[in-house]
Length: 172
Image 1 (spheres, rainbow, N blue to C red):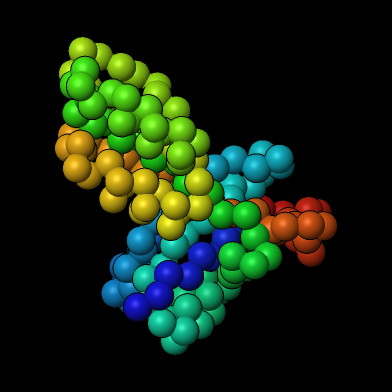
Image 2: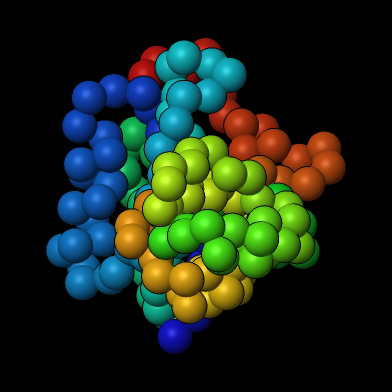
């Protein structure tokens, strides 16, 4: 199974995200992660979906998404032509005798300590998803107490923009 990154520009209206996620559920496709945010134009929201599946699943979902009236534009982001990032917060055991090791791990991955208590540390890392996976594997021996990942977000490299070809005069 493969991950595909779908980015979509949606009308910024109540219920749009519910209809979008319901579309995936009805067709039994798994969303690995989903992020939604405001855009430079308050009439639109941007959604990034990490879809688990094969090329058939990708084809079906992009066709179905394109049929939703509130979906204005869809693209499939690739690692070659897009910047993909995700945020991780991880709380780990950090006894005094292990802090020097954790400091070295933090420096290697260019992470940050965002909280430190006498026995725990919270580290923050923003990176490509596969780098986060590696960071998590390195942290596991210390004991991960809790972690949260935001889900992938993506932007096209260069001049290309998701909002290209959107008719901004269209009534939404």
